[in-house]
Figure (tube, rainbow, N blue to C red):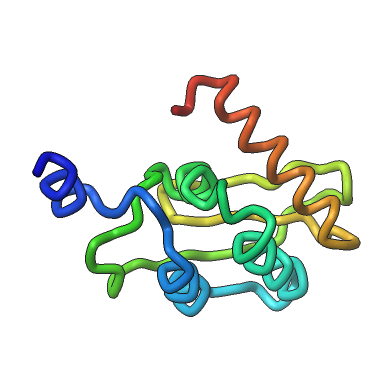
Amino acid sequence: SAEALREAWSGHGVISDADLQTWQSQTVVSPAVSKQAEWFFELLQNELKGVRARVLKFSTGSDRWPVDPRGFKYVIEPRDGEDSALPCAMTCGNMLQLPRYSSREPLRDRLLQALDSGVDLALK
């Protein structure tokens, strides 16, 4: 089918729980934002499950999970700012830069805001 061919060439359109575990296990996290990275993956596991592909697109440039993720690398680094600052992405390095948010809630809110801003910038 066309969808099977698409998946074989460009990856999975849905990021499963197993894919998320692989994503997390292949992520290099700066110790400065280890707590924020833990919250990030907890949010993707639970309440932000429906936006996993959008988060992947924001931070890697692709909303498709690789068919063979063995070579997939992801990096979470700190960035300046507090609870009101947006996360930043460097798609060329599969990098997400997170401010040192004080709790899960501002991380969730700023991440969703950043995803929505990306749509406004026609980063579809």
